Length: 540
Image 1 (tube, rainbow, N blue to C red):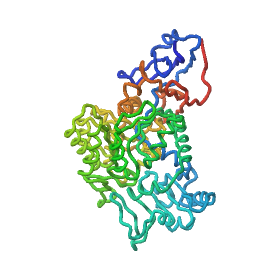
Image 2 (image 1 turned 90 degrees about the horizontal axis):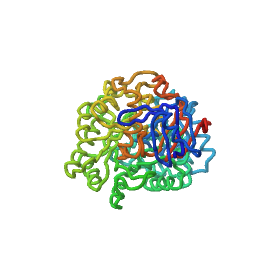
Image 3 (image 1 turned 90 degrees about the vertical axis):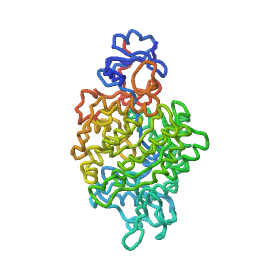
Image 4 (image 1 turned 60 degrees about the horizontal axis):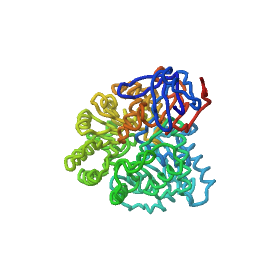
């Protein structure tokens, strides 16, 4: 006898045949039956809860295959430069000044989501402007890409960054023509300050709970966390899952924003490997960064930027270094992956994967590439040959699309190319990269279907996909990317009851209005963890 049944719906199974059925039954944490409403209703007993979907879509719980749980949660504790009222630097300065007035001297003032292309001045703030707000509080304003920040003099003092401090490998401490520090920190120079912007354990737990609640309300039941600030953040995230503060299932990449090499080495030395854990928290792939941000722009390209013929972006490692570090992780049992946005970086990661598989063959290794930004046809072909799982970010086009056209020109036709991936038989799983852009899977599905910017410009519409294909990228493909396709990612008998119910039909929705749908209910492990309104209740 089922505990709960769902009848009269648009049940999108995402099984091998992409069946659309009417009803399912759940007992405990598993799906036990699928079929017509008449067939499922016969299973109803006196203790069964019956929910009439009234034509609403019921889907497998969404899987976001690349986001940053702790970063998103921490950002919610700070100042949002994406807030609707932020139209200029002066608006940002006003909010920073107000926050500084609330905090004791010496406490960090944090702002996030800054994008110089979205404000009136079309530029970054300066160190001097932030100093005029406060010289007693360290101030940091992080760009939306999370690869660049601007800080004031107090922050530079705490960070021991001076005029003669050398640039770290893979990054830059920006200086003006007179050699003075501007306050802007780029790539590894930015990442190395992350651990200095300290958060208490209590703040971290609160931030993680806030993030989980938002994700669950968006229908997300599983996430692939793409990296914490440091090893301590990794520990706190695990504890937050165990004590119930975090509801979403986590496949945790072994990656720290600051010194990822050291964290990876320590995890290898501790005997960790991909798959250690359980259905709630599991160790994921070993991850490194190879280049920068697609919107920065700092990605490593094979041809110069369209916007700057002298710029080829930033690389973090040589080929030998990348092969050695990720090759060792592969040898010790890790799935391996790397942040690679530009085609030059992607090519390096493919070289690394090929070398690792040749040196230590392993069946079904499923190496990944996070983002896989500019994936030209030759790179897509190699991904297919090597069994690579790329993790593109469809929602980027809405927020950053015009910048992509400006910086990369015709290469936008090969950016995050879901159509090319699918037609090549490649399993590509989608991620939001939250907090870099909107975390809502419905938003990402719409972007994958129409590839339009906020201004309505089509960005490489040769790569659009169908609604069902986009749904698969956010469900079954995500499960495949974490070796979990036999447990979740589709609505099939004996799979986990991780489900999402929308407030309407996604298959009947206008493709440009999919994001206007909302989540009616989210179920994880057979438990209702989010409910927007009253259900129909029991029916007989």
